[in-house]
View 1 (cartoon, rainbow, N blue to C red):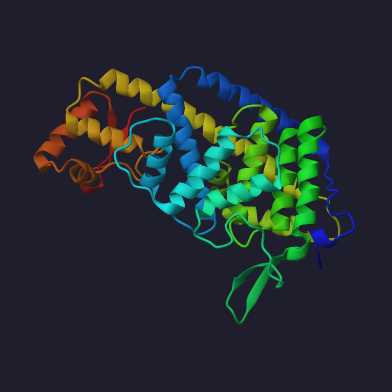
View 2: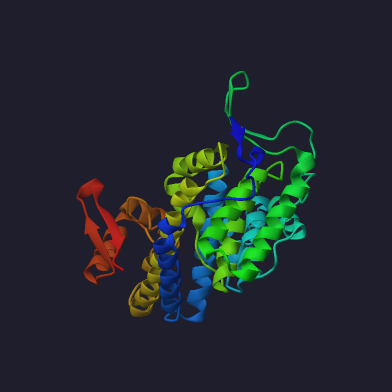
Length: 364
């Protein structure tokens, strides 16, 4: 079996484009829909939207690599950058790193792709935690993606030797910049090919997945001429196994026909866009809720509602319980019961279940 980069047609990716015209149309349509919805959000709400989407991308892109970040630290780092108030000055290195990378993607998406940019992203990601931060791999051993035990490893992919990395990236960089200049390839197709191509080169010792997904989001934003404001990694995380399976099929075979990869990636982008539109809708409804009830609730109730809203679209997993309310407010049980009943009466929350199974949900 040969890897994709070992085949004669490497770098000359082909696919059956007729299958994807409708999805490309959906991408542009949903992008316009999201832009229209954004016009209904005030400045602070737009900043909050950026924070939530970038935060979710940071959390999920790290989780895909098995790294679980501190959500509050990410939130604080992003709020500080966008000039919003922060409740603490908790600066954790890993959270700071991925935040800086994704903020750069958001703010500087129009920059041409270059070796310098890729190395800068890698250096931001690792924040001097690695000696080779910001440098391509140089070891002579094969760069392999493996799983299983040391004694029985399963090789999922082997990347080009380190000595080829610079030349391989030159080809990708030239192609990427030319496509964005001439627009001879459709937006989602450029992002799909760039992501697959980059991951197949695997230029760094670590962090390739996070940098590669950042590259895909940069490409989508560059095609739109504005930040795409989507979290690809949130969509990927829903069925992570499909992501790896799609790579496995695209990186091995007898040619570089990537129709199957495109069949995976294009719907993924649409899914990510729909999640973003849901987030925009959530921000709008959140603003209305706070505006309507900000003066009619006590401090405890406001504190709990703000805490639930911090969780994003779906709130607390499994709903809010009386014990959750008590933990957040430190209020006695009788006060908790009175506060929750009052929130239901005012139409701020709905109640499901009975006794210990009772749960409360924000009525957005």
